Amino acid sequence: MNRTYTKHLQRMMDETSRQADVIAVTSGKGGVGKTNIAGNLAICLAAAGKKVVLMDADLGLGNLDVIMNINSRYNISHVVSGQKTLDQITHIGPAGVEIICGGSGLEELANLSQFQRKHLIDELNALQDRADMIVIDTGAGINASVLGFCKASHHTVVVTTPEPTAMTDAYAVIKVLVGKNYEGRISLIVNMADSVAEGKKIYRQIADVAQRFLDFPVYEAGILCRDERLISAVKSREPVVLAYPRAKITTSLVAMTARLARGPAAGRGPEGFFQKVVNWFF
Ligand SMILES: Nc1ncnc2c1ncn2[C@@H]1O[C@H](COP(=O)(O)OP(=O)(O)OP(=O)(O)O)[C@@H](O)[C@H]1O
Ligand SMILES: [Mg+2]
Image (cartoon, protein in one colour):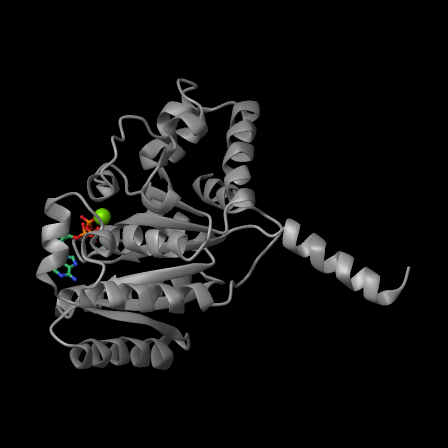
C-alpha cells in the first residue's frame, strides 16, 4: 500500500475513533458561578458547531436544570436502577446541547452486578464516541466524587471569584489535583470581577503560586465581570448568552469558549472517560 494512502487511512481512523474532549468545571468554594459557566460554555460550543453533552454531576444540589429550563425528574440513578434508558433521561437543550443529570447515580454503580455495570459504562462511553465535547458541571469542594470527575477529564476549569476565601479554595483544588498526579490541563476562570484588570491580577496571583509551589501551569480561561444581566437571566431560567446576546458578559463567555475549545486535549488514554470515573469509585 502506498505511504500517502496509508497516512490518509490512518488520519481517517483517528478521526472516526476520536472520542469527545471532556471539560470539568469545578471550584473550591460554592456559589462562584460554575453552573452558569458550564451551561453557557456548552451552548457556545454547540453554537460553534460542536456536538455537546452537558452533564450535571453536582450531588444533590445540582441546578443546571434551573438555568437550562428543563425538567430533570429523572437522572442517571434511574438508569442505574433500570427504570429508564440513557436516551430517556437525556434532554435536548438550547442549541441542541444534550443534557444529562448525573447526580448520585454514579456512586450507586457499586450496587450493580458486573454485567449491569458494564452495560451502563458502554452506554455512557457511546456518548463520548458520538459527541465532540462533554462539559461536566461538578459540585464545589474537594470530595471523592468531584475529584473523580476532574481526574477523569482532559481539562479541569477551576472557577474563583476575587474573594480571598474563593481564591484559597481554588488553589486548594489545584493543589489536590496536582497532588493526585492529574494528567490533564488546568485553567482558571475569575468570575464576578469588578474589572478585567482586577480579574487578571487574581489569575496571575494563583497561577504564580501554582507554578512556584506546585511546578504546574495554570492557564487563563478568562475573566468574567459581575453583570446584573446574568442575575436577570437566571431569574427567567435562561442562559445569559441567549437572553442577552449582545451583553459584555456574553462576549466574554464566547471568548472564553474559544480559548477552552483551542486547549489541546491532554493524556488521551485507551480508557473512556466514564470508565475512569467508575474506576475512581472502586
Ligand atoms: N458574572 C456574574 N455576575 C453576577 N452574578 C453572578 C455572576 N456569576 C454568578 N453570579 C451569581 O451567582 C449565583 C450562583 O451561580 P451558580 O449557580 O452558577 O454558582 P455555582 O458555583 O454553580 O454554585 P454551587 O456551588 O451552589 O453549585 C447566580 O445565580 C448569580 O446570582
Ligand atoms: Mg452549581
